[in-house]
Length: 288
Length: 336
Image 1 (tube, one colour):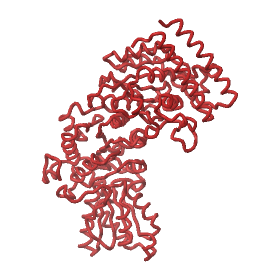
Image 2: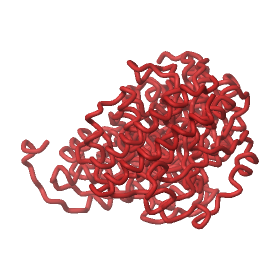
Image 3: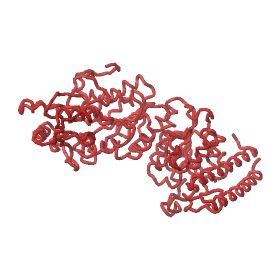
Image 4: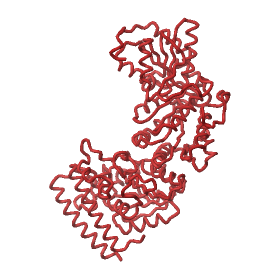
């Protein structure tokens, strides 16, 4: 499934479209987890538009690939992805985070179509992903389970219980992707609770660990291809920028959760357009 | 009752309650390939090991990592399996409270928690292993059915009911042997329906788990020694609670005692108190159990005596409550 230039450009266009929809959703909601939503958007784009084996007319198809978004506060990124994909009502995005909505900040798997787990309490996703992975083994199914964790949430010990078990059970059908955006609510991850050397930790727990640029669609695709072909469980540490695409919030932990007033909204739209131009130019130059 | 069981009535005096659970799960597993078993390094202690030996491909020991086990079970259930998870009650509740809350109950998955070593049944282990606050926690969780079986056969019935009823279950059983309340499985177990083990008009003792046998013994003692007519209810299902049985007890006997191998805060006693308060009716009432305290160390039967939840303790409490006053209100038509 090597990525050619045309597909790369198409994925860049989709990522741009989805970042804009994320921004719209944040604007409608008044505020949101825009920092971690934008950092993970390239990962979500690549998964939903290249890798996940899904049926558009049946979100609950039992043989579908699963995506467990352990960093549940990125619901503001996942909801636009699901609406764009056709699973969810586009109009519902306008109610995100509002009273009476089906869509809270952390998406409810029993209320929002296409959500494979209700997450938000951090450090739960990898265990759930392993459960769906082991279930595939018991049921004789060939689907893949992807788990996206944040980096700050790796402070939770339960992740490491799960990592140990993913390796122990040799669950190669579970692919762990860490959205390594380096920031958490109170500051930089290394200042609050140092994670490094993070790759060494996952390696020591038994996962085949790759560190890549998580905002580079080509690198993401190459590494997911590698993980799918591997007979060992793989962990992808996707080095990302919190706020990727919106220059004035990039790398600023204070934008973990931010208010999107009119002035910021307009500024952010311009920033996303400029970001897309840069991304396109990179794909044109480096693609083949 | 059908089910292809491998043991007989006499075995209930020869098998620990958890062994009956293991055998029941094994029988269910033979019929239903979607059942899987999970353990956190307690396969032998919780007796789920027999399932693991029969179905090694459907059994997962996750090591001493209960949070992970509950998350895995949630993922498995969402993918169509029916996981039975076994660990000690203290760890199946408080240790994994967030996973139980979010992964299991909020998602309303079809996972069955068999919490062993309930109450003070592992008494010598000390308070780290006494589970006398677990019901107070799990009873608050929506979607969760909570059962505290009285003995081995009731455990078999509860485990089968859990399989046959979609949604999350918490079944709390004891370590070791239970006194036999039921000579066979065929006594009319029904989820959410209390069973009246003794008819009575003077007072009602509502019990669950190991206290059911003690309540019967107390009722028989009080009948002979004091001439009292004591109703005994086996309230095996703590949630959903049999509200009608409690209302009838208020109306018929006007005196109620609850007895449980648990704190009086949050468990069966609290659940019954909530119903009494909701009716607005006068009722002399007392809750037996651990009185907002950790339990002493000792053998299960010794701790039960110390907590006053054995037959003698219940009999003493009945005599005390028979002397309590309550406000009469004979107009039941408006509320019951």
